[in-house]
Image (cartoon, rainbow over all chains, first blue to last red; front, side, top):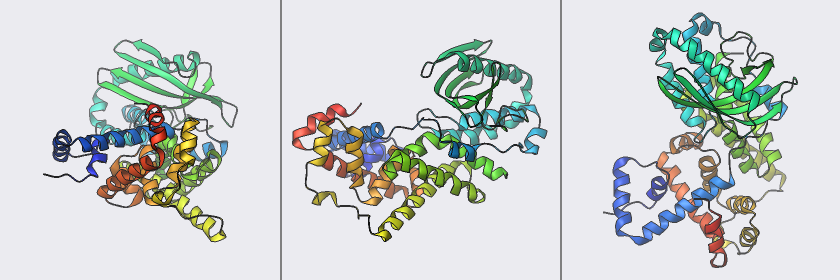
Length: 220
Length: 178
């Protein structure tokens, strides 16, 4: 039983299907030169990851302007009621995930979230409370926590951790912060993040697509 | 602004830190990389109506970035001040070695990776800087997943060959955070 040496890459990256993975594992146990090849593969992968880290610097204004959400939110999303808006906002927050594997994972999470809209409707009341807690916990951390310092919060059944990543002043002079967050509630844990800008006393608006209000984000 | 454009904006924002790492690594400098990033965002928004489902949008965005990069390379070559990728086996040793000893890891890796054949370089950067899965990288390059894996393996081997010389192998091992 021989394996294709290319599979070493897939094995190192966790991208092999189970059957091939087993074959590589068996071959590794037999062949020391293969084990050395795997070590080299991982060394290079680690070196590359260290050399080309995600760039979390503030955006040049010309690019930020391109990505600013349009003033009008899609009308049909608002008409579908608060539960759906809440999911849309959460889906967007998840889409903004900047932790670890980043967008790829986040986009798959979105697909799952959208399919659960009906179930979410039934628990609207509970979620309204959770949403307020998340907004408040996030605002607290964005107000008080320095860059790189994670701040935990808890409110009833919902808890979260928010870590500001960077701070910048946007084109219209607003104080904005990029952040990552993890939220834990009765329905499990979610991680996400994004960019929020302060629009008033302790009032932080998510940059995209807003936190449910018709006015959020549009002036950014 | 159409729904599709808003959706593309969301996907661009979600990909931003890694997309930016990718464009910078591709272009070879922060300024040129951010310039490529801007061109990528503009092109993606222009073509938002062509964007696929959320599951494939990341590959689509990186594909736009990479194709714009290739367009720029071709333009540079037409002007005559570019160079073809060099086969690593034909290189004299020394440069990468000296840089590693000076702990300029990024510069060393960037220089080494710039010497790889373009197809290997693209896959390495998509997966390392871009953080793409094999499936998304395959989408970005319009090649089968098996080709991604094969180029990745050969690219890492070539990189190892360029960076690891007997005199500095210990330094390299220590420089790998693992």
